[in-house]
Image (cartoon, rainbow, N blue to C red; front, side, top):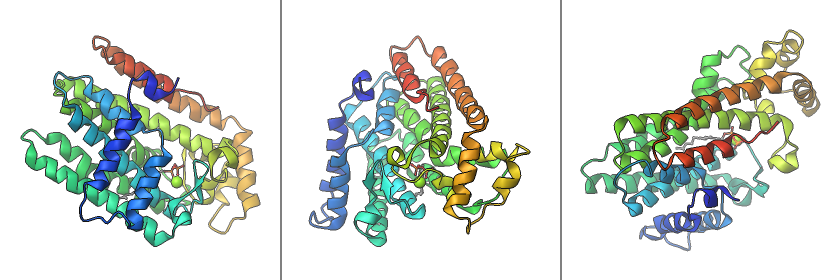
Length: 328
Ligand code: FPP
Ligand code: MG
């Protein structure tokens, strides 16, 4: 069964809301490439993980305005997709989920304008919402705060390219900024919208943070173990781009592997990168990385147990099972 079915969420409603986000913008001509790109992206589908997390969060409250929950759920997907369009330009990724990336299908300028428009539209809609509602503290979460963290996370990553002395705390803070904060905000915003108790909001936020950390750590692992056909991009791309992920940090703690890793730089050949990737794959490092991801999942599980009195706690179990799927 698909995650949406397990959570009893109709993804079509989320897609319809995303389509509304652009159709309701009378300043955006529908014949513009930007509109076509976004409609195409919506039709192409996706996991819609983040919108589902907003909906799950809202199930922990007393009052729910389904229309508003859906609006904010769609907003989170816009933020996510826009950030991936930028990410693919920055990473020079030619494919994502097996499909050509937007900048490959169109051009870099069009892709950047499309993503910028999506982010701007999010700000516009959130600002309109802010005027409509009295208690709108949750909007702060999704507007400036969250998007600036995404940018900071990516900047931390770029700023540390081939920095083999990257402290673990910097890696963790980068990971939190680029991935975990969005996930924790989704649950938090949903819960706040539904006027859940502050303590519950806080627990859901922590739960989302731990899931997000495990998710990104596993994603970093996949870059080492999956073939390019499955990954939709060449294996070892992160390392070739100089991104210091957890497998690399653990390899640097290994006397035998560290000198090989340290030799890599911007001019390293595909063979040199491939050799280090297979050295890491053939060592115990990925087991160590997986263990770290498991630790985050256990911490999330503990929080879910504290929320068992809520009917929606079964949704947390479902999310845990989904995020906890082993990649190794
Ligand atoms: C994927 O990382 C990328 C992110 C989780 C965030 C990217 C964010 C930005 C580029 C900032 C964008 C900000 C604005 C305002 C548009 P990855 O490369 O590790 O994952 P991948 O394997 O999915 O590419
Ligand atoms: Mg990328």
